[in-house]
Figure 1 (cartoon, one colour):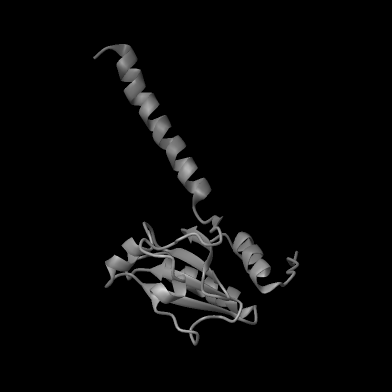
Figure 2 (tube, helix red, strand yellow; figure 1 turned 120 degrees about the vertical axis):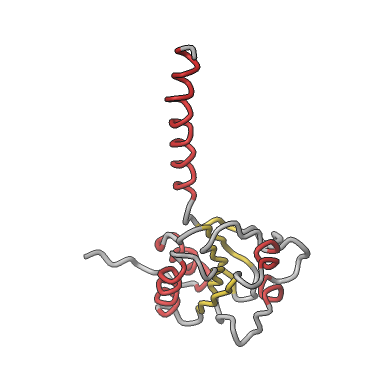
Length: 157
């Protein structure tokens, strides 16, 4: 094998993979806004809450954190605990966990490619934000503050 192709294969490909990994990590857990009227599901413009079968009794008055999980997701239990704690700090915010293990069609319909994935629904049951991966708490808290009209001041130790 020639020296140049060997160097490209030996150094270039691992560096490209490293760069791709850093790019993936930078996006993981970030809150992405969902524009008003944007269709989050694959087939229609109905409310996300309707597509999930969430009635008014399961929705928060101001916001709902819908976590898509699977039985084999190692980060899902800790994410669920964190979201329950976060929702508990707000009046009118609820956490709902949806297990995709037995309903893979639901994952296709909501374009879930990794778990956990979190949808943040507004008071009307429409998607206001989407997070792929473990949510970054400060970003998620800022979105919830916007939805609830609460001005949350972070505590510094």
